[in-house]
Length: 311
Image (cartoon, rainbow, N blue to C red; front, side, top):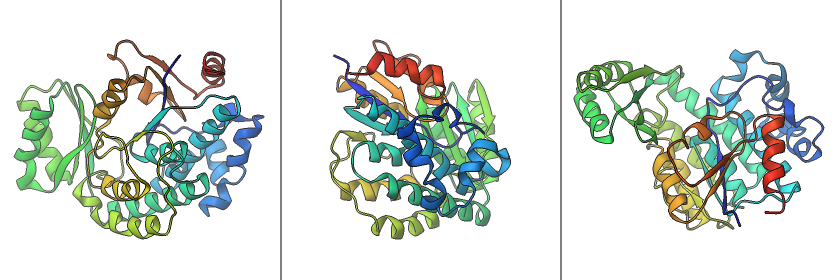
């Protein structure tokens, strides 16, 4: 019998029309029909369906939008009897992962991610920054590049997505210095990312402080199934810990590769990316003995339902 883990994608997985394959699925409509109300953003569902892309990808819009699509897919899976025994979410994806684990409700997750996106964008406007992906870099090389760049400004490791894919985040000058240091160290590819801020870096400290108030006003329950936190790559023990880790997440690295290894080490062998895009499926390459499924198209969702219904 499969031991299923749900993976929830983060910002960057969005596209205009990303919920089109959910049309006609009543379970999905229960979430999507309330999106504008829950996010307090009139027209957000229309942005998902029709764009324009530049407005959809704005941080304060895209975070509740991706969350809603992920939760809509989650509802479709649940209606078909496909349930996870564990969950993890990449950055923003940690919110729907906590919904899957029964820690927060969908009605809480959508306004929280709207608040998170708004606060992050405010920080980005106040403290400009960027991000760069180091392809083929070890953690040691990435940390050395960070140390070399610190005299130029605030910078840190933002994501360890897989073996050999590490993302740095910081001020423009520090990103430039770290990129040069990484190239000097022989890193195969150094790719600037198209983002509007220095996510998961010290520059997000004020956003973390603002988010704390919203989280404090939200009810958190203890996890009903194991859910892995980005900050620790370990299982969340309580609702109170989940709340604290969501605050720390904004200024800490996303330990995604370690999170997946943690799940595999506990016997999870079937991983389903729940939500838009295929980014997390791509990051599963190199892990042996696991089945990886998606839900971002009608064909992928139907195949996942066919293989896992009643599992």
